[in-house]
Length: 286
Image (tube, rainbow, N blue to C red; front, side, top):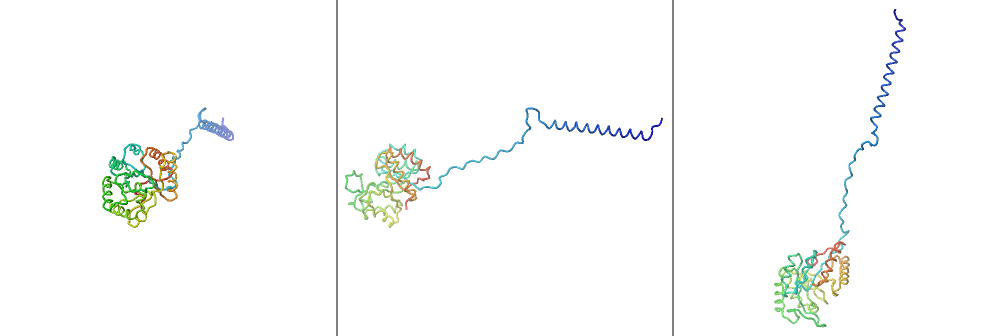
């Protein structure tokens, strides 16, 4: 029995509908399956993209805002003992040692100063005013001496302390007022290329004479240890620091004493942190 043409067309249309339905159903299942795969399993979070950590910024080293001034510390009267040498070696900052000549340990201390990087100068005994009774050092240079006597003592003193950079006066409040005597001394120091540090123990003609002679010269601003007291010495160091801040530099004189070195050992470190620079006297002479 033959099917009619219209019957065959109906069958084709039904087949197309069925096929389209199957495609739609499969598409739905495929989309649902993809969505399930994209979701992380329970209790787990999707992996996050690791970001590179920001580079570590190291703080710059702290530097004093500005150099506060230069300070030279001079310690007088070395030569009689080695008792403070160990404390001296603990102080890393520059120090200038003024050594009395031809005493028991004078030459030894000059050698130690060179070994540990300290500056050595001759602490030349000169005649003081006689208002008070002073015990004079052996071979103190006096106004009554001849030129030859003065130069003989000066030569022996310098020879006793090899490697010195300059000379300062021990006492000498009378001698440093006397132009003829100081001319003799300055002429010899100029020949030997040594500077003169004026301890400034009274009236002095030394600055003008040094300028005329072309001799390198400096003058003390503060005595540090007129009192053998730690608080007093710290106060004098603060005074020295104020002068250095205002003038650009300052020179302080102390002595070969346990208390003085003990205070300096700590105070110099603190002043350095505050921006002060410690130097030898040879760096400040003009």
